[in-house]
Length: 388
Ligand code: COS
Image 1 (tube, protein in one colour):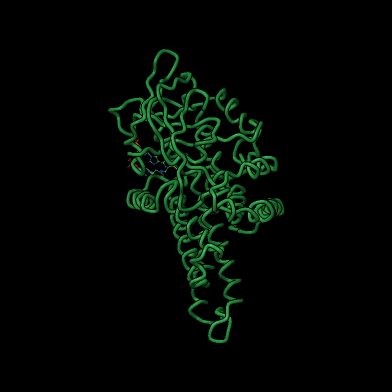
Image 2 (image 1 turned 120 degrees about the horizontal axis):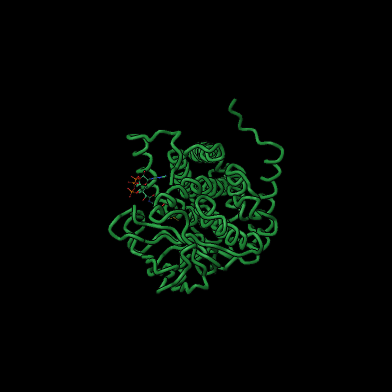
């Protein structure tokens, strides 16, 4: 039987995350956005409460939560502030390849660091010349004896300025395209240089940095999985993290809709609250139905992971639809506010800016469509695991 009812435990988890979002994030969200304030205080509180590192298995000190439970948390925290949530959730992206493919020793050491103290890790895939086209990356890792020597630069790295360690993708065979990429754990103190903090349109409380490696030496054991299997590790990672990003997009959209609904009941034009006008009602109706649909896709993509099924197609459905919904809902929320929606004093302007990144990071909406088209036109067998 298909049942969308949450268990008592899931409801309690959702309430706990909502409470945190309401009491700890909302009161500072617009202020932190203004100056791009780093939310260290909120990171420490969230870590203490177990709202970070949720997918790290219990044997390494994490909560070992299901992807579905993670989706519930991600929606609520993103409702609070998606910029702060991007910083809170980034460990999930950095650790997914480690949980998926790293050796026991690496898991103990590096997952353990994050569960023993409120430290951060970053996922380093994108480069100035390799965004959607991952296989064209130029960063190299050359094996020298029992070490790899890494050279190159990575951009748009969430939490890059604050991370204790980095999951880094680099070419180990420059001639082999996507089959020549490997994944590594690079501790910050191996010599990672933070070149630049980006000044962004939205999600301004999250840290986005450009980082570089100049002859950075790491032990050969820091290779994640097998050499030259990094591309598939990256793809399998994104299959696992896109459901959470979809849930974050739902959180932004829900926040924008709530503001729009409340405002439409207060704002009077032509002698009645604007909620009485069909033009507004139809916008609200589209918001409500599309948010519900986006949430169901996000949940389905998470439940498939929990069931051990390959979710590439549904993960891209969810990320694509939820991200585009967040942008549309936030845009319409500004419309409901009219001219006031364009003014920083009113809340929806921030949500409009925050929503935009959902269509860009962890694969643009166009890349999601590309994945959907490929999986639809030339489907791989659904039971085929995301083999490394
Ligand atoms: N799981 C496991 N393996 C996968 C996979 C998945 N989800 N998707 C693709 N692969 C495998 C393919 O089966 C193929 O394997 P073989 O080497 O055995 O043939 C290999 O990976 C290459 O696949 P493909 O030909 O589809 O690769 P492309 O170079 O065309 O790239 C896209 C595919 C565009 C989908 C990929 O580069 C991508 O996701 N880009 C966006 C990156 C992104 O999200 N960046 C954001 C940064 S993280 S914030």
